[in-house]
Amino acid sequence: MRIKMQCLAGALVWCVMGNASAVDLFEIRISITENDGGTSQPYTVTDGTSNAEELIDILDDNNLRQLVMQQHPSRSFDGDERVLGTLNFRGVDVLLNYNDFVTPLGGGSTLVFAIPELEGLSETFDGESRRASLQAFKDFLKGNEGDIISQMYGLLAKRSPTDPIAGNPASAQSQVAQRDFQQAFTQKVSQVWGCSVSAAGEQIMLAKAGFGCEQQVADANFRWPAIEVAQLEGSQIDSSSIGLFDDYYEQANRARGENQAAIGLQYAQIKANNGSNEFTTTMFSLPLSYTVVFDSNPNRRLILSLPISLSDTEGAETYQFGFGLGYSHPLTSRWSLTPSVGYTVVGSEDLAAASALASFSVTSSYSFELGGWGFNLGNMLGSYSSQKLKVGDFESDPGISNTIMTNGLLVSGPSSLLANDLVLEYYINDTRYMGDDLFIDNAQEIGINIGKLSTQGEVVTSFLKAGISYMLAGGDGDNEADVLRLSLVYKF
Image (cartoon, rainbow, N blue to C red; front, side, top):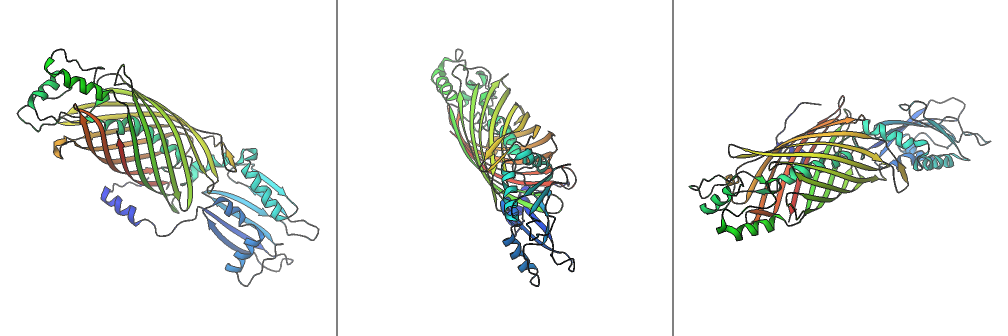
């Protein structure tokens, strides 16, 4: 991975400028030899597209004839030539050959399919005509006969910078792992609580109640660093020693026990490079969630999530739909664990890709204060494996399985540095992929969030948070990816 550290302002320029022209995800190079007894030399035509079926259809006689007319006007394509095609299928070489000339007796229509990297993988399709053989080949791929597509997906996750299932920051596997970490760490920390009351007496009261507020009554604008409500020790506030504030405590307890819904919008631009070509993916995500607070202990929470996303990779569209369930359990006043399970469906007819993804993860979140600042350490370990799925005409089980580990640090400064009820957060995350070989096996992200809080009885009842982050990711050789992400989350 190249070593660099660009500032967020530079990342914004990089996002806006981008590449002016699209890059074809699929390319084909075809060698054609005329059926004239060997008197002429072979010639070559090339083409590209971002749709898998269009790529295969290039071998149809009518499409080949058009290509020859465009690229070799002096030649004529009759349909009886020897045709040898090499397809770059998103980074994996595929051979499709009509090895023989067409004869008056009907020979020469046999199509030979092979993937050199998959040893021994070769199939033949012998129809009544070349068009019939080509159709038989497409039906073979759609039915995933012999588990061919599944074997290809394993290679694509390793070779392709644009695979929608796994291997790069735009893939479903990477997106699900990131959501698991955000749900149990980044988003959770943003449910902040601070000693923002102006009355000195109430600051003393909160300090006595064990909320961690210092008794700095001389400064009416004093604000303590952000502290996660769900990590405060005890299920109820003990008001027995301060009877003057019974109503205040009851109000705070009611607010702490309310369920919350969240809706967000996220935009990401991913540029992935395999050393020869750079591919751009634009992704829009709609993360939806609902948090159920346990009546017996408001610090225990059940989180239901329904993330939806649409991405465009050089004109090829991919859809993701997911369901997740997490349970946040406080071990101490500062430390909580959140196990999560999920199931995600990803499909793209343009890229000839379809799979489901099962996930399980456990995230630890530990917070503390130091020198007027709030710190939170996050650690996640998760298992993510593909499952069999059929979308449209394509069916496959890629058989991809990885263990993903993410470690992060989030720092929140004293809110008084900005304004009342505004919180600024800085974070850095490091992610590692272990298991099956992937195009990208590590990623580092830096980001800034700013949040506006609404409080009731000194408990945060809702917040609106905007964020920007920049990620650098790398793998073997020249494999690398850059990601700029903008997000907006409203929890209420």
